[in-house]
Length: 161
Image 1 (tube, rainbow, N blue to C red):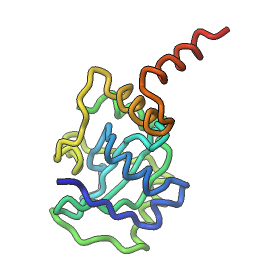
Image 2: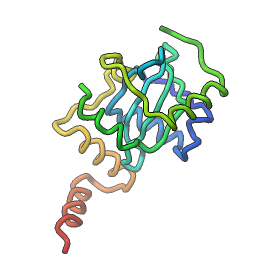
Image 3: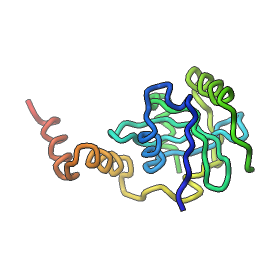
Image 4: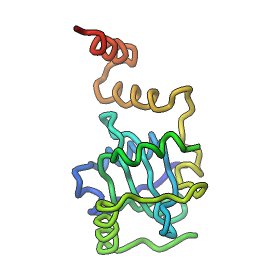
């Protein structure tokens, strides 16, 4: 059973599309409760072009989430990727805007071991190098090229003089 994703208008304030937000949930690399908040989660996943996004949401229960913040992932949050191993009512637009503003200005601190809905549902892909696999999958979909061609292009770029 999939996750129903509801996006507040505040989720689009940083130029991220609904398709990109949905793709981040499909390619989630990190999903954890934010420190100091009872039901606000930080998710890091890829957009449809292979860029990492930070997405913040509330878990409404019954596999429904309410996204209130989405933007290009900040470098300070990337370290979470290497360390990754109560039903509530939905928030108002004002609450979503306030949370988006807060988390745009402040990096979220997460609570270790308090995973989000995607991790609890087992939506993580398994691979030896999961970041590379998801990047290749996303780039293959975005460019309509097979992963082997993308790898070849990356290698040519690296060794081109």
